[in-house]
Length: 182
Image 1 (tube, rainbow, N blue to C red):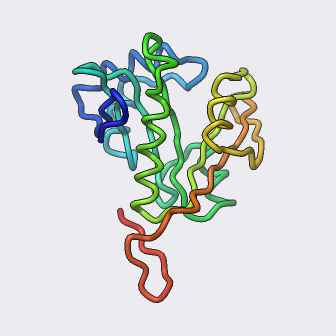
Image 2 (cartoon, rainbow, N blue to C red; image 1 turned 30 degrees about the vertical axis):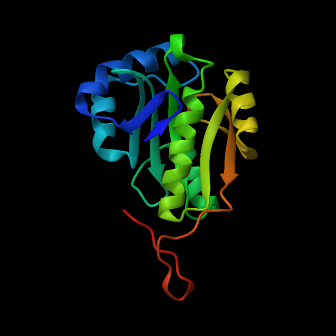
Image 3 (cartoon, one colour; image 1 turned 60 degrees about the vertical axis):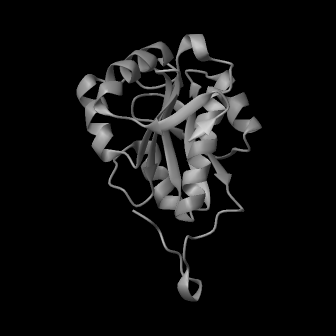
């Protein structure tokens, strides 16, 4: 899918070095990924998408659907309190591509994926400690609102945020039920 000057596509194994490099630039705003963890995410994540400009990956997003097996502490918080959703575990943009709309392109892609699946919400967390004010501003502009806070086992304080997608419709909903693609 093309958003502006960025092409958003599924990540493949050859993207892992770029994902790890982008991730390293984003720490502490995002949690550090070990190479083995990044490789496992190619299989485990509902969506692992990269945004590329030309032939270069300049950003990535890792997303889990509410029905997946994922033990992330923040994800589990949402699972206990929220219905069906897509959870943005990480989004990171290469330093040289920041401020150019690439994160917005990734979020438009995630919102489209949620709509195709008939999911009514996107959830995520933003660090409050350590502070990530740029991420908070970005997510507020995109329509996310805080629905809770969590002190994590590793000592972070996070804002738990949600965006309701009012236009989301199930791909097919016989007798009013919700159909979820897997």
